[in-house]
Image (cartoon, rainbow, N blue to C red; front, side):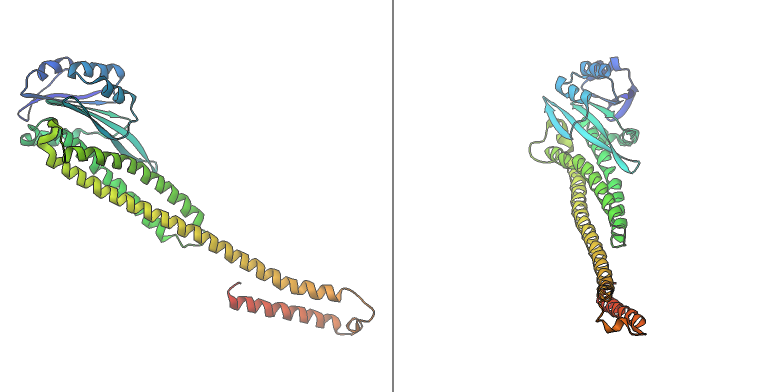
Length: 321
């Protein structure tokens, strides 16, 4: 679906144009065309390939979707893939933004995501001095907007982890905490898969041999790289903390099981005393004088109860009961 198709000159908007007019504007070297699509069909991508003279392999990647974040050079142009992350029902939904960059055009294709990028175009149009830098600056603006939307997700996960840590030593909460920690670790991994490959891609635009189409904006991409570095460091810290929290939770489970085993062993020892006395006095031999004694039965009960009470208080002092 077509969202916008706009032509610019010297950073200022000329007009909203039809798709069929794109190739005509591209022949004017002073013009810059910016097209945005959402969930594009194969026919739409094929039409864009014809108008912008895109490389067939890049179009094929955009059509198939589910690509890892990357940056590829095709002649004088670039093809970039970014992941769009949305918090959804306690999980993270992964969309995709495919960006085709040429000398005087940029084409963005958003797939499987409800995030709109209209604010980026409005921001660029308010700054014609930077917009007239062309496709390199627009690529930076798109990347910067996508990366900035990772920060709230990371902050949400950090807050959730802090909440789990506050409950980590509550009795009976270990199983629930472990389940939440594993779910959180899975979400951290999803964000990690979006950030780590993108760092490698953006580094190509910020240092070393920078592609000509983005050379004038390399210092902007350095800012994006710094943001990705911060996010990646936060994710590494989160993963380490989650792993530690899982180990602590598993240790808590083992400690609770050990406490239960101690209590069971203590009660078993207490009742073993009663069983032993009852077994001895239940043999009923004729030569057992206490069987004929008037107070033998209550005295036997008193001895049994006394022995059980002595063991009970002994285990209580040991912390087993």
